[in-house]
Length: 185
Image (cartoon, rainbow, N blue to C red; front, side, top):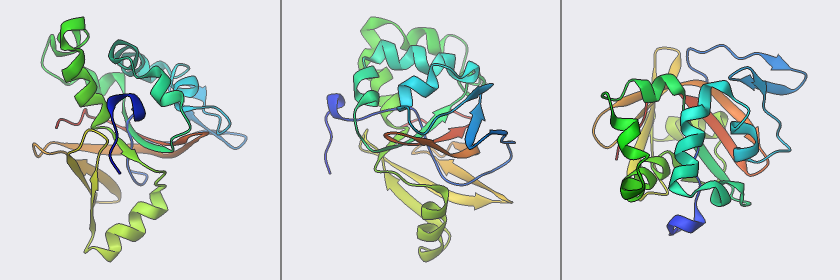
């Protein structure tokens, strides 16, 4: 399945529960101090998470809001503000400049996989493939999911890793898996 920039989403995603704690308000997972509602789309939920303000600003700067509000479905590995803070000083500010929109879009869409992959789906497919699952992102390059200890990690094309800290945050148009590092194509 081939996507153009205007036909994919972002918000970053992954596989199973790793090290983070998940609070549940009724049936809704809490992310960044806000309840995430499965009846809302990725953007409408993300804007309420105090842990994802950098991601939301990046999605707006890249012009991906309408895409992430579309029906999808998408699996998004969503980096937190702390994940963006791990990047070298000045990286986020540079990416947010209009002249770097293409690079920003590539980084953001590298966090998105077409379809809705819940943690159980990822675990089953990884088990069937010797413990690892390789997925092609909307950006076009691959990420690999595997177990480390009791949690799941996502490995990017450069060998960097990110832990899934909150899995299975259901959205109207897919699922978000919160990650603690930015993935790089």
